[in-house]
Image 1: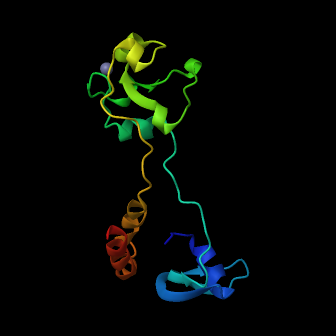
Image 2: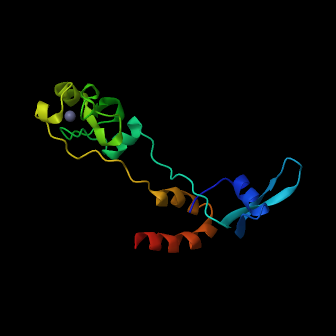
Image 3: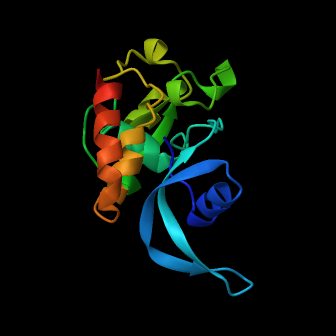
Length: 162
Ligand SMILES: [Zn+2]
């Protein structure tokens, strides 16, 4: 299941690559002035593989994964007072990736310096992991706006939870 732009959905239904299951509430006018009603739910004739959106590796996403908590001393701070720490320092070959970046307060980051946690005698609160893509979260934000989506989402949620 995916969310796609209305224009893409119209093109897919017009070209016969998707069936229209639910009509949307609004119309959309083409460049030529022709009025199309907007599809809301469509079924693709064949599934077009698209990459699953992944959370981007940003300060905000790392802090959010770690609950805005320094992973060494467990102090909770706002993002201005938190830093990113490469668990294995870059100069020791550590990569800039989810599994090697953690949240640290500046005091702990300074204390750790360019060392590994073992060398610095510091322990991580939690192993840094790559967050799972939460597809459910992608759809749930639309349901209040497009109630007709619900009947398609509920059985699908059950299936993916089983
Ligand atoms: Zn700390």
